[in-house]
Image (tube, rainbow, N blue to C red):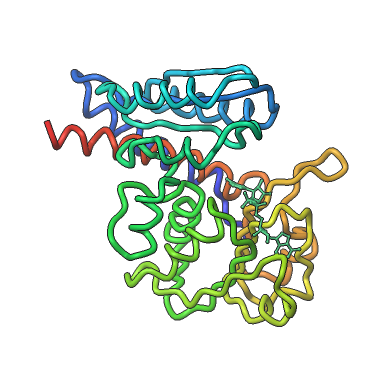
Length: 285
Ligand code: NAD
């Protein structure tokens, strides 16, 4: 069975839109983005995020810089956005050019406007099991997709392929939280794991986030496993995931497609985090 991330994300956008309509009369929620350089994929991702914001009624403030921008200019902008009471969320589209210190940029964003959930304050709280202001969008989107598909991870072996700071690590932290909706037994594998297949074959839920086109073959997947493919790769001009979908689908009980799986959920969670930030502020004033 296919897990339809596109449909689920559209349901979420509808729900967000309804919630935002209830705030009519006060200002709309606002997401400010920072986009640097000409990297085509980044422009495409930002365009999709902006379109989704417009659809649900979130205002967008765009800040586009040329590749040659210096660290100080971006930091000054972030400091201004942190102080701007009309801005609820700040998104810095990654990757940044190599002359920019990305870690310093991420740490400059106020944890209370860090709707990407990348600030060490939020990541640290997630890891410690304290409530962060925001959970990173892709892990949050995967969890939401699992819940809305009635898939429980408690008591299950979840294997995550990839240990990046934006997907693998926070996803592992999220799914092992002590809550009835999580409580998973999590194993993380990566490019230096030697007995990969032995571990993936033990997965009740296999989540791939490697950026290796169609690396996961049918013989690596347990019969009846749930497969969540985070990878977005170009192969022979086509968009594919990390999973060899055609051959793995018959082996899996449920599986996400690429495109139309985790990707749209990531965008929906960015909007959800922005609304959450807006609502947190409304409670303070
Ligand atoms: P990354 O390059 O930062 O990390 C990749 C991880 O995969 C590393 O930990 C590496 O050790 C591991 N890895 C690579 N090859 C491996 C192999 N052969 N065996 C085992 N482990 C291996 O990547 P990232 O930023 O986490 O992104 C991963 C993929 O997910 C990319 O295709 C990216 O485009 C996609 N992505 C999708 C979304 C979405 O919303 N769907 C969001 C973020 C990333």
